[in-house]
Image (cartoon, rainbow over all chains, first blue to last red; front, side):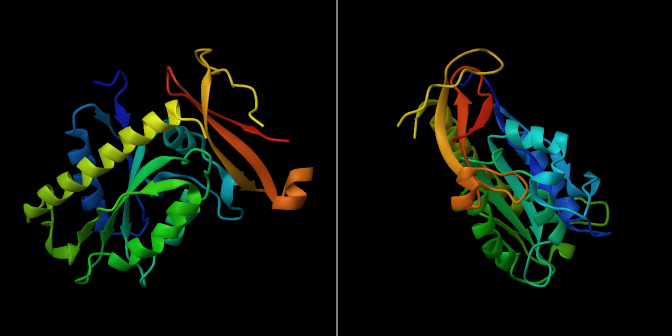
Length: 187
Length: 58
């Protein structure tokens, strides 16, 4: 048993009005919070007051930086916009760097079409690598997300719970393993 | 060459040096930045409380 619980926040990676990914991020954060010895927060990038007249670590947000520093792993919920990720998600991710190194990340893709954000996930992988994050080999793909939740945000397809659980098991293993490495294995 | 162990700023324990990374910077000046267009930063994690710290090399 570990003395300190893992901390795995969930980042909602879009600011668009009416975003369907909000339901996804809430669901995933709820499932993370059910895991033993894991703490989480839902970080909505729409609430981070980052300026857009500069970029990178120059616009670091104290609370976001602190959460990334504390994190052992991350879940990024990324809707697919024109085959790519939201520009503001990249803007927020770029505001930190050393906070991420040797930490695990899992990506949840979301799309209105049938591919479940597969392309946004592929586009995010090299970004994650350059940030120093370690990607896991499980994703969750929310296809035709408008049909997955009802108007109140209730999940309509129970199969997603099993998929999220499998994804989280892998992410937690990687987070725990990398924490051990960060704290005990020298480069 | 192995640099001296960092002490954790929170609990004082010896930290583990787990990574080096070049941090791009257009703002600061330094010899290393001339070569790498950035600074080499060592990242350390505390073996006791898990806190993290970084220091610029060179």
